Image (cartoon, rainbow, N blue to C red; front, side):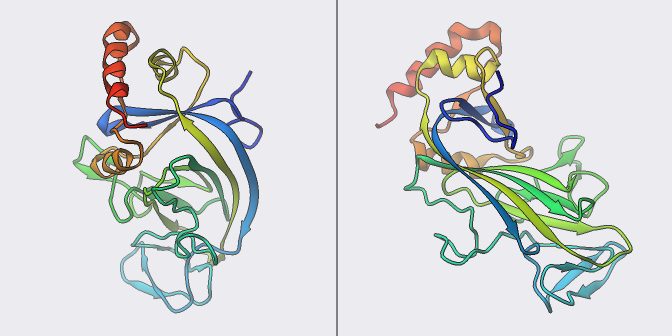
Length: 254
């Protein structure tokens, strides 16, 4: 039986594994309960009168809110403002005191050809080819998705978005968001943690796109949860992993 529903959100009482690949660590959560929202966000966070970069070089002025001119992209990261949110400039920011809260969001960008990438933290390039030799992103030939992107928001971790319209058509944009607001508990059973990370226990695995540097995310994880995550071990090193996890768990202040 799948641990996610038809919207791609983790079901109640199922496990969610969050991996920070460059640092080779993971967190394991149990979703205790959740709220699910469907939000039609009225246009990407692009404002009339601001300047966007052009793929062919140069700049262009945005003619109206949420409109992406032809062959344009956002050079700097964006967040999604929302009135009344904890941080009104970023509706998905979670304060570090809310350690039992996670947002899991599927963004369905309109039109579906729009390029999208996420940066953690904002304005920090994370996608690279040949180790760190060639960077990627919406302004490069690789390092982006089109139309849909999935994001898991942990407390106090700032995440930015960049967008690109590499067509000859000026478009009015939008974003259908499927939002899971999870109430979670951190799993601190060494056996369950190991089995979830290596895939022996049913769990949904989300990998942060942090392939160049993970220090920012690790620092936030430590502030919120009291440790930097569980090191990832191969399945054949189970005994070593369990001993390490017990050591880590014994030092966490609960």
